[in-house]
Image (cartoon, rainbow, N blue to C red):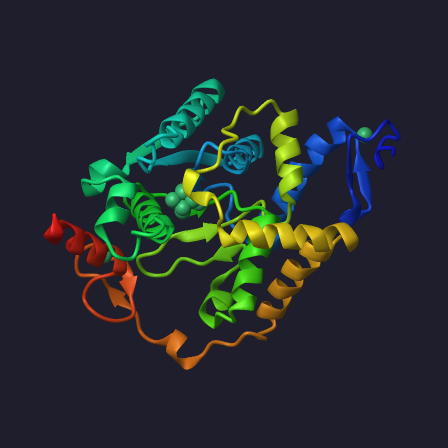
Length: 309
Ligand code: Q46
Ligand code: ZN
Ligand code: ZN
């Protein structure tokens, strides 16, 4: 196969776009795709301060590289979750994030969850009924809360995450299978800011995971290959596998599934239910928005853990 732009030998074939590209043109094409998504969905402008949530993996480090190369003002935030037992996962991924920042002259913030809450993620999970089986729901709650808090307190306009199209399609698939209307209303490349919550964007949302991996490799980005030990058996990985089977037989399925959803949502196909429009108010401890009660679920969880401990 030949590169569509220059006729040299292609190093990657992207059947969903009927496009093969050589190394040079592929390395130019990926940032172009990200730039198009940023513009198309109005994610941010050149004068805004961007915070990238960095995990040490291929997606977030590629995103950081791309945004920096595109000339944006962008810092990184690594959350040290303290998932180290047996695997050393957090220590290792932190090393990748820190090394990457030093090598590229970028600014990385590190927040240690154990310092913020007094416990690591596995310890928090152990201390709550919700997380005892598997810490992912506690971990997700803590990550969302801490990243948002950090961005607000440090004057960032927007929070960018490295979700790629496979991540987005798998999440959408899960939300459709379970018909989760509230999630279906909220998923997408851009979540506008609301009182207490910073704007969230996903500039890689139109790029397939294998293409982000190829980009990271070709750019010589050193990232952690190891997954979090708790990711094993996650339903999202199963959904990704199933979507890839469809994609193999019908190239472009993942892209159409996701992009048509965004289009439909824009036309009002998934209209707001009354309860989604209910008034929000601030959590009395951290100030993040909640629909009911006095404390948000993060602050409730911490109060519970601390009372027990
Ligand atoms: S880091 Fe946390 Fe993930 Fe590990 S504990 Fe689960 S949610 S799998 S993205
Ligand atoms: Zn070429
Ligand atoms: Zn709170």
